[in-house]
Length: 217
Image (cartoon, rainbow, N blue to C red; front, side, top):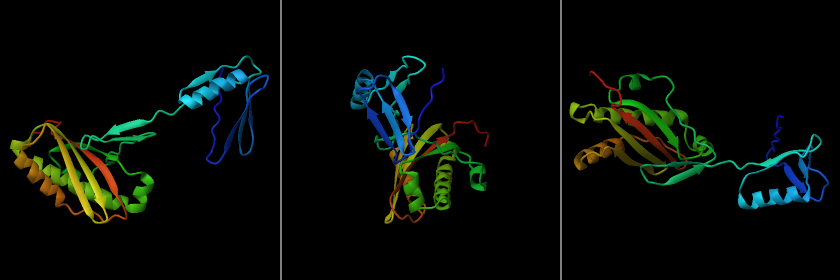
């Protein structure tokens, strides 16, 4: 038997009416009313209070099966700060196609972006073009730094970029680590990349894989 799921739009109501002889679901224009037996209402009430899932099967063809399912939050922990971010879901953004700058890269084999600012705030504070141009410049600076033969070691680099109206902050974690003098040189190069103007805080993690594919250059 297929199970029909009802979706409530924002602003719609959900009403629970216990002390019924059988479970029944009634849809209205503005919401949904659940007519429930006392036993079913008790199970649903406990699930809502505890944040647990529950499924109440239909007693027969005439009744309705009811389930409460909680969306599981997805977590992302930044390797730069150790801070954990929680969202309903995370979307990885990877470059589509190749610009002339990315085609010429030697050390950087792949990259992805984890936005730590909501998409709504991002759209209000900067433009996709400005942010993409900045990230391309950061990626090219990383590639130039790790291209010399003595630095051709397989690494994963996480760069946290925090942009504000007053400037920008660059924080970096590399695995494996670099020596202190190389780390300082790399940090200064990335700090010197001009950041776009933003209308409010914008934060993201830029994750790059270096020398993960053998090169003959």
